[in-house]
Image 1 (cartoon, rainbow, N blue to C red):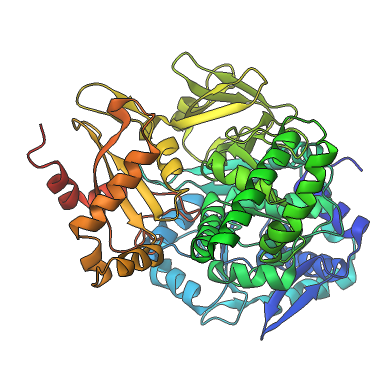
Image 2: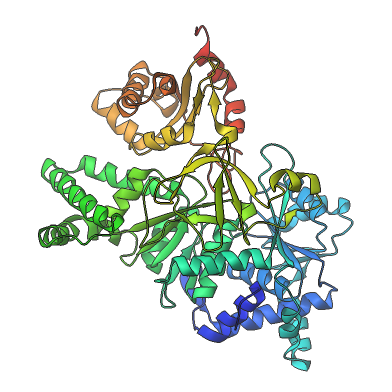
Length: 595
């Protein structure tokens, strides 16, 4: 059947693939499976349970939960009931939860556990629209999900096609979800994405990745409340019949990869950066012979990967060398991902070209894409058969990309949001009269049609001398070095560029120990020898930059940036303004006396 809505997509998936393990999750130390029939039953029971609460077309229902099967149950049930869902990050504070529940006019909210229910309880007195709190687990003062399903099951027994009829009444122009932006420059805005928006992105992705098969498994760990995982790691996986395995948490992803042995997964660059750093750390500790073998294998792998990028077959001699390099080195790297991984899909932040090439050389393909919440999210992506590291790929079918006079990337097509909820002026500012969405990113299209993103307009550093610096490419270059965990360039309205650097402390500690430099983390990052070492690394890696782009000074931070401290977004992007405000005294000291 033609897929026009996410409800169509859901029924086509459970009816067409009929898998015994459509979803997987880990409980009490063991992986468990949820089949298509069980998924259909859960969704239909919850949908009719919601209908019994008076939830239907035009209503919003919030989901405040980490990734788990019940998240999918609730999402699909809300959509099949004809309502729209509002997805909230479980890391939000009670005041932030209150703002979104109030602004979205949510009539009900699903919560995962007592901790999330407590946030709602704390602010509920100010939420006139909110009528129901539904707990995936039993929560004080809330309706248990099992009870809601029981009510729906009774209604379903009387009319087994009731949910399918409701789902069939949903149209592609109906709002499917409200996703609130991070709000780093003001109150969050609710992005209205329709069924048609999200389905167009899924169908475009299916054309771009025809090699993804129903016998694959995808490991899901990025927040489902974020549109990247929701589209690429969830809706697209349902459409393709891929089994979705939910990671226990971000920290357990490496172990879960070994257990699940996925063929693919979606991630942000931070995971690849950490994996790349771990490999380099191990190689640095290996005997000289092993280091030489690794270096040879990497050179051979890069040559083989270049053939793939350039779409030409490697010669016989190169194929023989690739087979040996794979046996000696690359098969061991892939074994650390479970041994079956074929594809990473990268998004959410820029990926360094060197990292994409390293994984490509190792036989693990990273296809980087680009988009925003307002674009459902994919605008462009690299494909397995059409890729170019250092770019974010080609537009999906039906998606237009245009570069404005000032270099801003614009996009138009079926993927563009309906607008910002209750904010018509903000919508008009974002979408022009021709229907082009203004992304706020700067970039250009290369001669082969691949889009290259240079930076965010708002992140561009303008020095006191009027020079413009795009920080992201420089930061990404430095983060390929194993000594760096995070780099945040600064210098706006200052007379030179500087940087806040989070060291890879394990690598730094080993280096310091070899040189007889001892002390705590706080002490080490302040030592002149350590700061000088990092400046030498920076200078060596940025020697080709224009003089005004070069980092003249840096300060080493004693701890990693974190979501809990509000320094990283849920997709692990740096909140520059938060970081600059938090470390303002250090920054001021860095520039003190500078002329």
